[in-house]
Figure 1 (tube, rainbow, N blue to C red):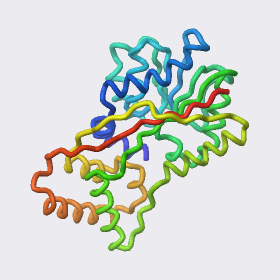
Figure 2 (cartoon, one colour; figure 1 turned 90 degrees about the vertical axis):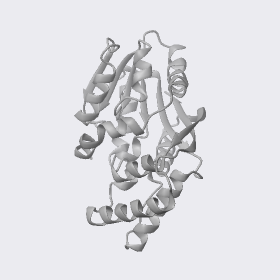
Figure 3 (cartoon, rainbow, N blue to C red; figure 1 turned 180 degrees about the horizontal axis):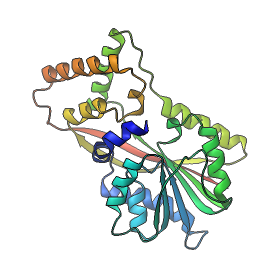
Length: 263
């Protein structure tokens, strides 16, 4: 999906964001435990994208490696941290074969990431390899309440696809998180999950439709183009009939969870 993200990096950055106070809470939840055990820690983020996790941590002056395999995403991030990136490195590389020495990092961060990889076992193994003893693996994800207009629009699209004979597969992210947790437990590690932030996002039907039509969500990627385009056209027509104003905003309630594993 690298070429896809090259086209939509700026849309991704604009639509997949956290409010400043939420970004601050997430940054604290990740950095505070590490600071208790290490001086001047070095953080690595896998699949850093355009930097919604990286930027607030980099801005606090931490040493930080933002890794992604897509140069367009990294270019957006590079522009955002141009004035505060003295201790930051942006690295284009494969998470399944990390270009770092064994035991060279204090923390590895993976947010909405494992489900994007076929080689997630290798990426996890690599993450644990580069962590020094006592280091931290942080996994993070957003979790919606499932009752918003945003969810209604997604469900309508799923119904349209079903009528066209295409079964949309969802839930891969949560399923992969469960797989990773089982692997961590198998390694006799102790992952612990907690909610670190809650907030309400105001979102319009137009934004929800844009996120689907630009294939921002990973569950849209496997839909063949010959099915995808007519299904989106039908969804847009439905939305124009249902919503008198596509720019009228509605609330979407979110939580951000962090699963922490210490070696």
